[in-house]
Image 1: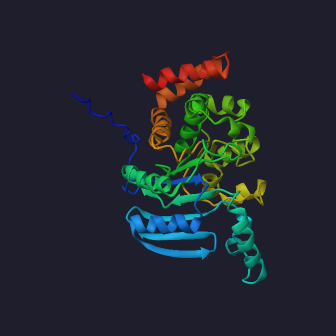
Image 2: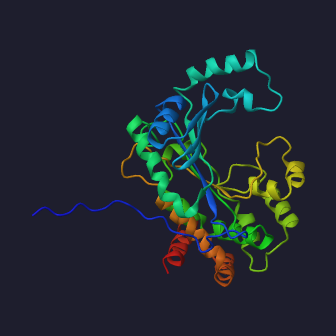
Length: 325
C-alpha cells in the first residue's frame, strides 16, 4: 500500500504583537529578486493568475493594481533604467536611452517583485507568486552563480516609540550570528559583498541592559556606527521616518524612503526550487520579535553577550538554545 506523500507546506508563524497601535493587523511588504522572464512578461502572468489592473510605469517597470493578493510591482532592479522615477527628470531623450539600455540589461540585471504591505496573517497568500514565477521559468540563487538575489521583508513596527526600536535592534543584533547561519548565505553572495553584520562595538553598546535611549540618541548612535544601507537589518528607512533631518545631516545623498517599517535583507531567493518557501525566513524573523517583546529575557541575553568570550559560531549555538527553549 502506497504511503501518503509528506506535506512540504510550512506554516507562517505569527508575531507576539499582531496589531499596531491603531488596532489594525500589522503589515509586511515582501521583495523577491530573480532573472529569466522580463518584467512585462512577469506582470502579465501575474495579472492572468491574480486579476487586477496592469499599469506600465516605463518599459521596464510595471504595477499590478487590485489583484487577488493586493498591489504588486515588477521592475528591473536598477535606478538608471527608470529615469522617470527620479526627481526632476523630464520626458525625452534620457528615458528613451534608458528604455533601450534596459532591454539589453534585462539579460544581466535581476527583476525585483515588490508586494504592497500585506496583513501579516495573510502571508501564506504570497505563495501563489512563487508558483507563477516558477511556471515562467524564473531563476534564482541556485541557477545563476554570478548573480546575487535577495529576499527582503519590510515588517511594520508594532509601536512607534523609542523602547520598541531599541528592543528590536537589540534582539536582532544578538540573534544575528544564528540568523546568518540558519539562512546559509550562498557563497556567491559573500563574494559579491552581501550585507555586513553590525560592528561588534555597536552590538556591545546596545546589548547593555541599561541601553534604552530616546529616539534622537538612538539615531545618533546608529549613524555613528552604521552610516550605510549595507546591513542585514537596515534601519535607515525607519529612522528617516522618525527624524528625516537628523538622518539627512549624516547621509544627505543616500537613497532612503522613510517608512514605519524595518528592512530585513536576506541573501537567498531560490525561486526555481519547488521546495523553497519564504516561510522559514519569516519564521526566524518572528524569533526576533519574540525576544524583543520579552524585556526581562532580552536584558538577560544582552548581559550574557557582554560576558561572552567565544566566537560568533559559538554564540550562534547559544542563541539557538535560547530560540528553541
